[in-house]
Image (cartoon, rainbow, N blue to C red):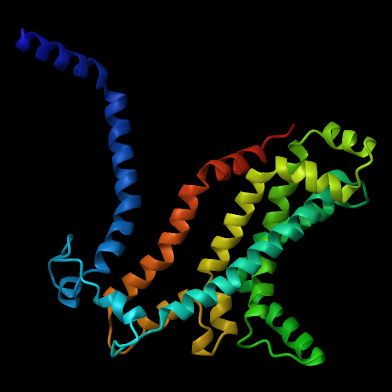
Length: 300
């Protein structure tokens, strides 16, 4: 009886495991390994010794959960203390204001483009998207020169100024945030807002009470996108920051990497600390992120 049941199970698996499904399983496995293995290697390397990382034979599993690299980053008693907590704080000082300002400005601007009628509206929207197509390396020189001239006339330094860094990040994130929210606001039925106007609501009340609650997925998508760019940005921070006490995490990791005495386990530990919050944020807000990215691409 047991042999018969086993044969039925084998026959069932043989019928289910067709050639297309086999190819799909192989492609899916390759994709998952190629995506997850670098993340695993980064996390595991943060617990390895220098000998395990620099040896000829690759060590896939560390000999133990050694906290030497993390102690160097956070323990003031360590001889090579890096004070990485201050770099995390600097990154938060830049990322959070950038996200909040970008969301607020993009809400107002995209609502005006989606709902109000004025000349050149489509040209304005396409121009905003065109700005985003230029890579940041092309914009950094004119942006630096413009801010330097404004700073000289007003009387503030653009170097080692986290507020100026927020402005440069807004120049990168606002165009696509405006474009994403404009497409999403167009999917919200205009009749709902017209009913609010008939009931006596002002435009700002309609945005606050009607539009924003319906646009939460898009707002979350824009917020995550903006926060991720400000959190990971390297080039602008490298140009505008010279003071080590103001370094953000990407600059600090680059400094550790280029140290005369290489410590790849410390670099991997710092990279892990920098990566995990973004991964956690995506996992927690995945449902809103998916709705925001897909709904804005449908014209209703």
